[in-house]
Image (tube, rainbow, N blue to C red):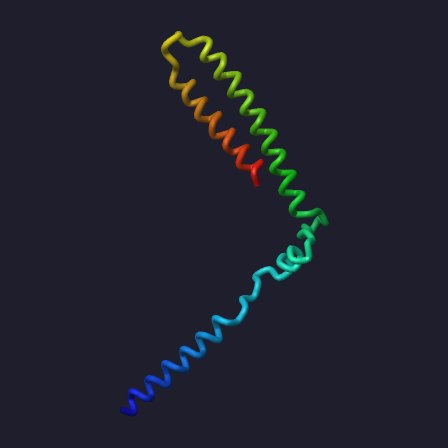
Length: 113
């Protein structure tokens, strides 16, 4: 009987400790970033620039590079299709269409974010 009471008391105390640990708010890993976002401000990089602005600038540059590559691939595909026979397309032309599709999806996904 004493064993059951001791085990029950132990289980009850462990449950109480577990509920206290769960009820506490987690400590943010980077407290400054959460405070800046809650205040409506932006995170600043060590250089003093806005992190959001830098991310947007880099994504814009990537979009421009990808768009140039997309235009080049489209021109190459057009030339290949004009060279190929009327009913037969080369495998390289099909691969270029896949590359064009991947580039277009990459640009679209960056623009949506």
